Amino acid sequence: MKTDDVIEHIEKQNVTAVELLDEFDPNLQFKFAKAMTALKQVIDDVRILYPDASYYIQDDAFYLMLGDSHSGDHKQNANTNLIALTDNHKLAGCISGGGF
Image 1 (cartoon, rainbow, N blue to C red):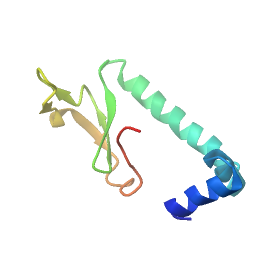
Image 2: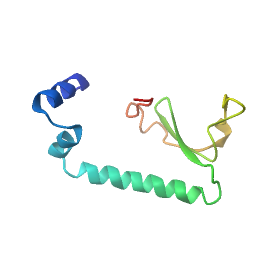
Image 3: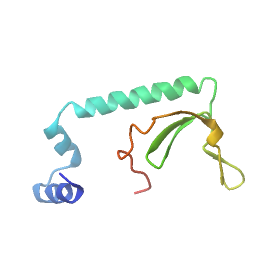
Image 4: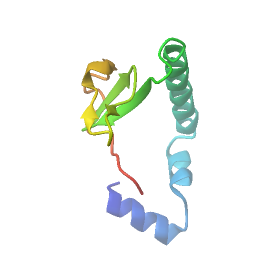
């Protein structure tokens, strides 16, 4: 189902996105939670030595950085030299960012 179809279905059937996902595969919530726990463990391990380490998402790429993504007075300087790992485009087309 494409985005417009999902929105219409949610409105017409008075269901939530979580309910739709559970209907499709009840194990997906568990899989997602497991993946998030694994990502949290990785960053916790890295932060033992690099306490400012973080994940950063840019243009459909997922990065593990050993410090802040940007620095300077107005955070205008990209710290690309702190990129330690990347997803090698495994998540291309799967990530969307921004504020709601």
